[in-house]
Image 1: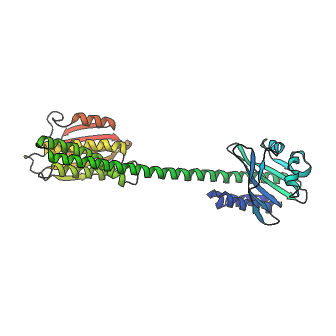
Image 2: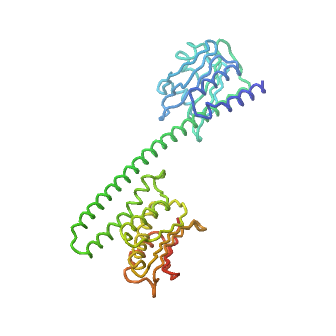
Amino acid sequence: MLIKFVESIESLAKSRFLREGDVESYLKELLLITSETLGCNRVNAWVFNDGRTSLHCLMAYTNEKKCYSQGMTLEKSNLPKYFQYLEKNKIIVSDNAQSELMNVELLDSYLIPYDIQSMIDVPVRSEGQMTGVICFEHVGKKHKWKREERKYAQSIAQLVSLALETEKKNNYRHQLESLLKQKELLISEINHRVKNNISIILSLIRLQKEKAKDSFHKILLDDIGNKLFSMAAVQEQLHRSKYIDKISSEEYLKELVINLNRSFGYDKHVQLVYHLKTILLDITKAIPLALIANEVITNSYKYAFGPANKSPVLIISTDLLSNNMMLLQIRDNGPGIEEGPHKGMGLDIIEGLCAQIDSDVKYENDKGCLVSFCFPL
């Protein structure tokens, strides 16, 4: 008999319905197998409601008719003593069910109509709390429950508990996945609208530039427009990205350089050289970095690529360092820097933006101007 019990438990523990949290299918399998293993006529599984004022039958199996049923409810208000015994959170063994005091309230409504002579009620527990009960019932004749039968019944109750917990976790997971999908759609829509709004502002700036009557204001509007474009480029990459909060630094830096070359390099024939690694950037880092790159590259076009520079070269490189640090370097082949950043470098803007991303900035003369930024990802 013990071998039969072990084989039954092993079979039920390997059920795919248990792994999937399919409680209804699993209970059908479990009730059938346990009924045959114990040789009892009826097996049913019950769960408490949230207030523990009623027991609802999840599934009942009758061996004689080979049929399942569900939906019966036992109310605490009608069975106060029986519920009091259940709340002790202990196994209830009834060898002579119809004559025992603990079952007196069940006689007329349950035990006599179904001719139940012996039964055993085993608590189903979850996270230390009793959440239900599984009942094994003999019909037509009394049965004395053996010790190994009780242990087997308790093991089955644990499997029922596991199935209910798996179903609960699966439901939570599906809810979280649904909420995450909604969040991703919402963020994508927000990014799309932000990008569109920036594009509208850029269009207005370009229209205003056409009305400007002097080069100073045209250059000023170009400068503002390029700063806005650097932010728009980030939003555009974010909209295309498969991530909701990360973009590829490689793609957006190329787009940024191409736009600045279109604005300032139309008659300079600047050679653009990229040494870019594909590095994912959080949006909170990407926007300040785009503005930083915009300032430095703009100044290269303004100060390094004058008439004296016959073969202007701009080199943009990125690298992933140890300790999850990113290095961005922008190099031109202009006259370099004599004593610190020259006038017009926008040093205040760069330093303020560097502070936002915890970046160090370094200026060097190395066959031109080399500006390096190192910051944590």
